[in-house]
Length: 111
Length: 116
Image (cartoon, rainbow over all chains, first blue to last red):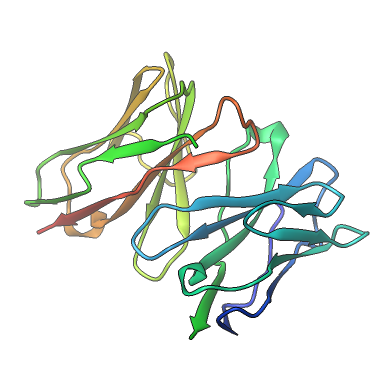
């Protein structure tokens, strides 16, 4: 499985934008970039995903580098409820769509 | 959105006993479900893929005779931890791909297993 590299932790101030980076230099052409987040003592929840183009939804934006070797999850205005571990995952649809989690980035949000 | 439930949310058992954890897709059908295990301060580790009507597919290093998976219906998968030992204490999480949003997986809230 292609691997991702994320910073172990990041800090943000409430109501400020947050940019969470992810490196995936060995990404293949069939890999989609998925982001999930996990709040303490809960199961992960889907955030966003994309292939080549930047994506926006109600939760976040995903900016994908032109060479697809990196991506950035953007939370436009962080709230205290956004404090979580954010996982960047490459999903190979040729392997049944299973998700292999890396270590993720623990985001803390200061009031 | 789609909901996945797990039961129980937590369980404490004695060493040597077996524990069954249920994973249900509440408002959609799931021919495939996934089981993960998560130790404190660590990431999720995929254990197995549960397939409705057929045998589960286990990841390398996961003992299939210890972690029995049954996917008897399109909305229910069960994970049985047999002869549990303290090192099996962990947070067990299941997930199911959404039928309508094919690129999305929905995760259960997790089951905290403590083996004394």
